[in-house]
Length: 367
Image 1 (cartoon, rainbow, N blue to C red):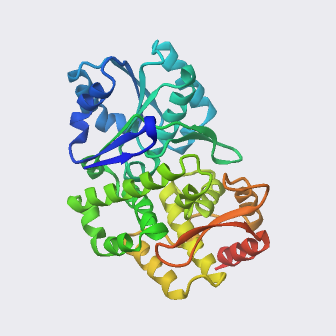
Image 2: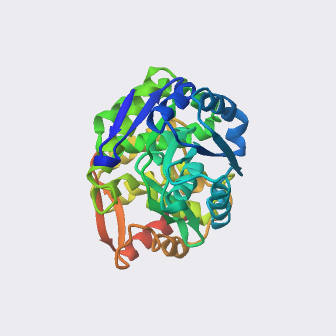
């Protein structure tokens, strides 16, 4: 399957299907025939997928160097960013060469930021190895690292030249990671496609099993994101809808100091989407039947749906508000949330009263 992200002279293809990794070298060589590559991957992915990927590059005659980083969210930091920039330069890659991200969202975000910065911008190729990365973070050109003030607050918009999403790779994912990625798939139905959400309710088990339904779910998710990105590349309006559940979710991640043993990104998004729907109910925008339907689907697939599902102690509501105040969607200090009027009817609400959010969070933290 192929999904096109239409951005004028920066348009690119997302190649989706089982076995795409084996043809990756040929795809890249056709796109950038004379390029030398720096392949950035993490230690976990390197042990599983680096060998076949490197063989594919070599078979296509592509000279490449490999740089590994530690696995985990803590890798998205200034220290690793600096080291990677230095190593790409030490490999004597030029502006016409390319940097490749072989990994999940952490590797993709970090590598993309490196490729945006080194020599003021090099070609960037995404080879996502997790469901979350295939349907979300590898598409749209958001790159970056974390700050002590919050997640993804330092970075750049830098579109890839191509995205190669091998859905067979997902067979190797731990079930927790696959579920976490599925939260982003469900998000696309919840934010703007009620029919897709209903399809997921009927077909999620086949998506998990790896049949053609998985390819379809990835392709439909990528198409949904491609359409939004094409309309609003720099997130000045409509693209903010893609953050359904993320304002709350990012605050939860920051509150646990990005300790993935307690919470991974997709789990934060799952709880965040539930909080967004419950907050929408609190504001009278939806009824309890909508909240119950969303909760049923997320819990059916094994995703967390309550703040209490996060192990360990959490900070008070005031701390969450401080984190949310640093969210990238905040404008002139006013809080912005993605709320909903129903399944597939998400919208951007600016100027949300912090007192309402505070009272809501206090209640949820005490349940």
